[in-house]
Image (cartoon, rainbow, N blue to C red; front, side):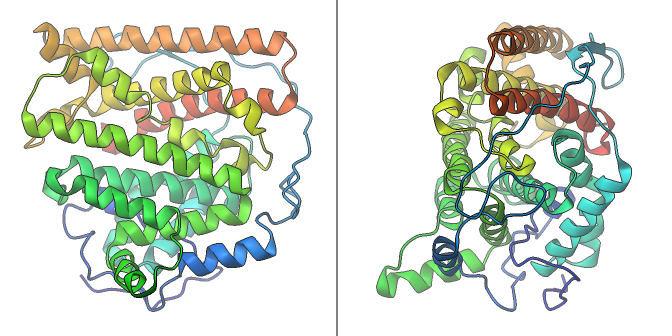
Amino acid sequence: MTSIAEQQPPNSIESASALSSALTVPKGLGSSAFTLPERFSSRESYSARSQSGSVVDDPNTLCDSGNTCRPRMVPQYAEPPCLNREWGDGSASPLYCPPPDRDDDRLAAEVDDRLIAWASGLGLTEQDAEDLRRIGFGRLIMLTHTDCDDPDRLLLAAQMDTAWWMADDLFADDTARGAIPEELGPRLSLVMAAMDPQPEMGEFSPPLDDALAGHLVFRAFESAVAHLNRHATPAQTHRACYATAAMFVSWNAYSSWRQSERTIPAWQYLAARQNDSFYTSMTLIDPVAGYRLPDEIFYRTRVRHEAFRAGTAAVLVNDLMSVDRDAADEIPVCNMVLQVAAERGCSLSEATEIVVDLHNRVVRDFEAERLAMRMAGSPPELQLYLRGLRSWMAGSFEWHNTNPRYR
């Protein structure tokens, strides 16, 4: 492939994440052919950020440059009720889910334009960039982060989400695109080094820098986190890092199961799925929207359970709509429908109905607990966050159900 890394897109930010486009390209996106003309140093960016303050004060944020976030009033409006929504080819039972809060094609296109420009800056070819546009990550972020209409803040979510997705495809799931089960753990350890910059280690640092510069996935994570740092507090950034590390533990479990060709009980798969879900994406809800849910609330068990419910419901939608592709892989991918079918010896259609029922019960439990917390007079930041979780479920369903990747 011909690199266009030297092209500088207009209004680009150094921390662009070029990962998404790899998701539809069947070969070569992880190759060392993609090189940046000048590598953005994670250690330098982290140091400079620590000295200058971590959050930019602008009209779209409630955090000032001293990392103090002010509470925001929760807009009051009539929430549309959850609906039984048709999905896929309509042959399975409906999925119970809230409808999306907005559908703004212009905003989605703007986020995609920025993502593609940054992707090109990280070394994607023009064809790869077009593949990225067809995936429509801008639309995913527009549908899920509905408390924000600032394209730059939405872009940071697009970068992080596509980075996670790219690592999943290229490192964990898709053997046709270079996923090697034996290499998963070492590769993920380097992803964490790209996300959470290491201190200088003398003569041992240059080889690490070279390794992180030599693969598109590592470069993408490094630049995406650099962009997140400009809008988030240190605690918000490290929530995303912590959630990513927990997610990677599950990926290694899946890899072990696949290599051993063992049939894993559905309950064990679901336990691993709690930390490998769209919960990781949902850690970005408050920095994208420009407020901060305090740590002492974010990490409460009751709040985390709500986030896990929302993340698990969204990832069950992903499993349901990905089952045909996952089953067709040379080494079948772990998927709740496949696990249920294997464990119970039933057909995929019967397993699908079981997973649909589980999804619908999870969403009903989420709604009941969310309303209970709201009635109890929870603080405005928590109300915003809970609404953000609901919006993420709604937008994620809409995106999956209308995206050619899952049709």
